[in-house]
Length: 222
Image (cartoon, rainbow, N blue to C red; front, side):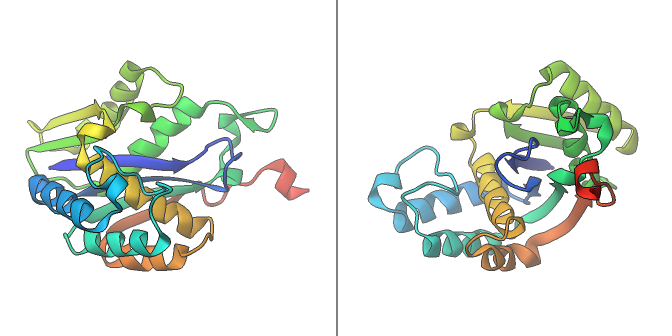
């Protein structure tokens, strides 16, 4: 099983109130790659038709086309698992003088919690593919070691578990994860068409979870 992962938002809270990590899996990754590229060539503006990467927030896309693209992706039977965090609820152990500072460790915790939504996994392999630019202030070795320590004991005895960091321009799956994240970010930030974007993907969402829902900062208490 291959899972494609991306995130949207900022753990420091200076570009929105929420941070979202989303993943999806699909039975045949080659099929969705072909479908997305055909959609790109037939529906996107000329300037985007042959680009190696088209992000959800590309300025050449209209809101109507974003929505139609999400509806098209939903028809490809993608299965979505995601977590979200309200930045103001991040626990004090990740803060220093009220400001979030352990972003690398926090990011690792969020990714691990997101992948745990897949459990139990009864398949012989679980491959996680993410954008190599996603790592947040933590070494690649520590990130991979921490995630594996959390997941491996809960997989089949001889299961293969890998985390691959790729250039998103070479992975349609990671690009689609960006589209999923972008739409969920719009929804939680209550931005334009956020409700419609969420509705387009709702039936494809297998698991969703808010992390740290019962925490708050001293500033909010006051």
